[in-house]
Length: 110
Image: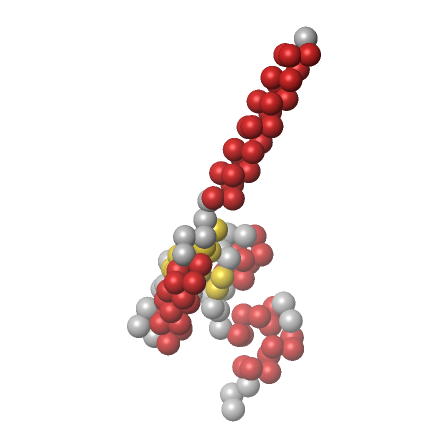
């Protein structure tokens, strides 16, 4: 009986160790959504960010860039971030006024 309990505990421990090892080995994926073309300054910045992450973090973190509103438009991307559907976005600052009025300063016409 004691031998059977020891076997069950050993199998459970090994299963846990392998599960943790597998979870740690999986890369973190960051979805980066923006609404402009890749050849614009914002699009170039997103691609440069992706390249820097790949260079510095290797396979640990992967950044997937979605230009031209492929995932979400400017009006929905902040809501998508709150829901966890996208991890990084570059919306216009006017979209933040719904969440905080202090950022309306940057939308002044001059």
